[in-house]
Image 1: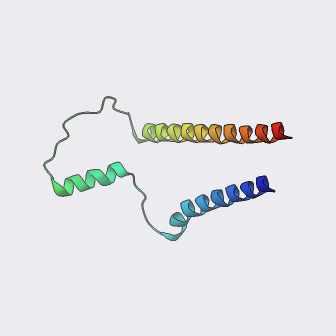
Image 2: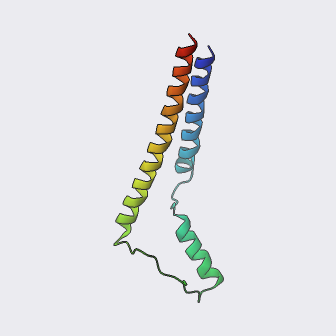
Image 3: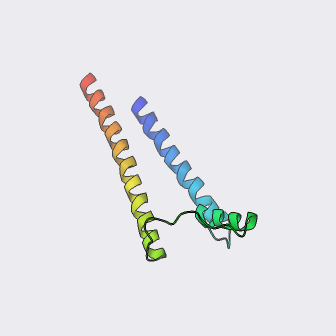
Length: 101
């Protein structure tokens, strides 16, 4: 009974996260979602238009597509780690339940 309640709670949490992530995309029409880097660059230009960066990036990426690819790979790796940890703890929970029986 307690295991079913935990599963139900987990599904409610997942649905809540999906709901919170998708509602801005549905409710905010005709908007452009940009990254924090672009917003920071605009803010710096407003505050101090003559500002020049004091260092250059170590690696210059050839284009926006490569940046998007690296971002997607980073997101996929993060999702993989989170999935692995969830599976690990779920497996431990099942193993503990089996050992108690």
